[in-house]
Picture 1 (cartoon, rainbow, N blue to C red):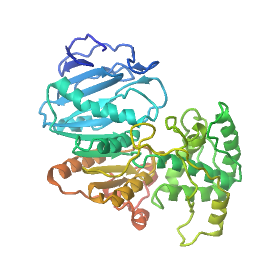
Picture 2 (picture 1 turned 180 degrees about the vertical axis):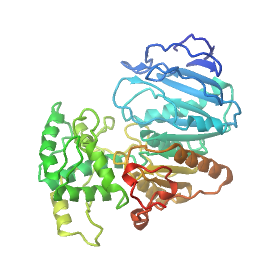
Picture 3 (picture 1 turned 30 degrees about the horizontal axis):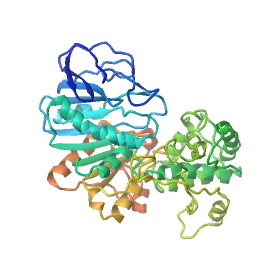
Picture 4 (picture 1 turned 45 degrees about the vertical axis):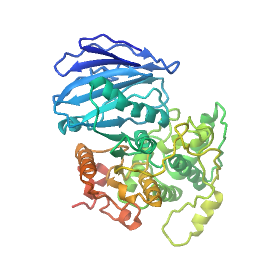
Length: 466
């Protein structure tokens, strides 16, 4: 147990350190991260401060904020002045492999409070792609809220972005009676199919460029440099230059067509999205490469840094660059030449490794996704929609397309409308409208995504929305 004494009310509960701060209290000074009690080598950042040093204080619509550390995870709770009895549990996204965990506020914080909802968030006790720990620590927040506030929530909503969307999708299946509604945003709701996409983008690029690559199941320590060398031969053949807008060659244009179909099908704004993501730098340890090339699963042996083997597989994937009824000669050649990889592990049925999302919700799920997101692609919505349909649960899933090219590039009105419609759905039983994400013609329509988009992004300035 970690105790923190500040100008506030201090409450002790079993296994939890808790600081409860009235809305009128002056902010206290930030403290240094403390060693984790559950993860050797980890530090837990002060939940009373953001990572930039800004104190966490109650908003005007809040009566009190609560913070603390439990089992190596920092957490926050905020209670509105006029609480409606409902709680929103928020799950954050991927934060790399650093060893300091920290908690942050949800984007809809002010909206929750204005509508009378309390909210709770956790840092999780680990970083990396540890969805299982995210589920455990997020579910624990329901009990943390009760102990901290002395109140029991009548209804609990689950929401999360990016990896937190994966946490959300797994949590509502792992604990089907704990939640009444869920809202994943830009979420990995197709579990390991995200890693299949990373594989597909890279092996098709290599095949179209005529560069031989490999996929080591146990990559050597110097493999990132080996991959850099291979990528340096791929990029010129495609017309992609690190840090600059692409000037695509014929092979590069074919690659763009393949990636478009692999990430959701022909749809408006894709050319701008493809240029955006190929101009952007990737993430560590390959942050010097164009974005998609830094995500090659072979760098980690296809484990995502957490699975017990390679979770990627493209043995039976048919790559398309057109929508013709039959494969073209060029498509047949690509499929014959592309590197094929076989999985040695699968998505986990439990909370270890990379947990599987069955697509079997027992509560309303309203999801939204940028159609130009090429980090966690729009196709995640289609994966979940197909699984829900196979399980006879299509009536419990609504997907909304947003005309953005970034990752989690949503405006407040878009998020607010989504949450409000979810709440109305839960309370009234009336399923709100969404997009026909499995209808290829609907997705390809020039106006796709217009209905739910509020605010025009640069890539869509010349779009057809009225």
